Image 1 (cartoon, one colour):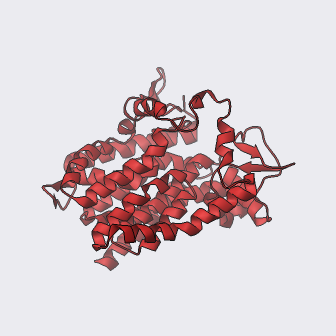
Image 2: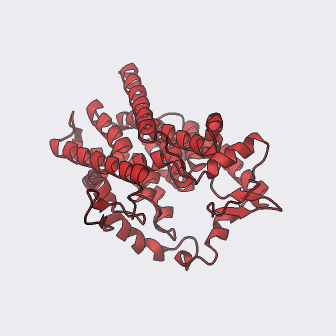
Image 3: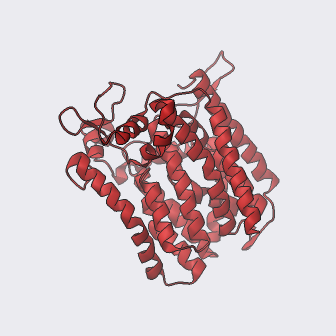
Length: 395
């Protein structure tokens, strides 16, 4: 079974990456922070030597030096593709990372307990029926970071769900956090998931996970020191100065209502007189409009009282989203609610649980209604990716 699952996972990863590359063929982003930073790394620099006006999230970090505020892993992963040019290299990296996440997520869902076809459905929904599709294909730096985080977040979920080495869980979380910092908040819950799988004491597993993540934390702290002269991440703080969206600081519970509106209620735009009459809004759209499959998450939460594994997965999703829903902005520009990708592996696991688990027992296949919702989600996200990337239809 393990060999068969490995083959399915590799097939899904290749199909996801190939599909994303096809969707994004020839498209380049002007927001190539990571591509430019990758080029700087190859020249022994951690800073850029120019400050184009459209790259408005560069922060001065010395005379004639501008630093990228975002964590550096996506830039490192972009280096092999630099012969394509900084913009295209970043986009190709984003598409491969986002599409390949299907393989790790499939393995994670299998280890979580999902039967093969349920796990296949979950992995396919993740890569073709969520905002991960548009975000990875578009490839601008904010989205590319999510692509990398979903890849390694899915890997962390897989290792934890199968009760793998705690240090490996920490390493995968560390890699994910070097793309998107909020993912690190899921650490205690993934340690709990692994402890439940192995029967080991929670404190021991958590310590191993933390130790596995320490080298990556040290890398990030060192990166802060060379950029800002401090272990603290001063770049994000600088960006928020004077910004009307951060009236209560970078994080505040007072921001939660705007996130709840974005998650549950934000509609698309109706534009008359064109075949593209429903257009995505750059401010965002409801998570449950863009991916109706996530409605099954609420049914999955009912199993948390019965299963410690489901409960740990639900806690992981909540912890990963906590920094996001208390953040000053809701993630625009975006399609859907892009911060959901920080918890995507866990949300998908909860969704397939809600559909395929009854009384603690898994069904062998997804329900017809779930599959219809999945097809609808794929259609919505494919429509958005084509409309925005190819035609610029973005209100």
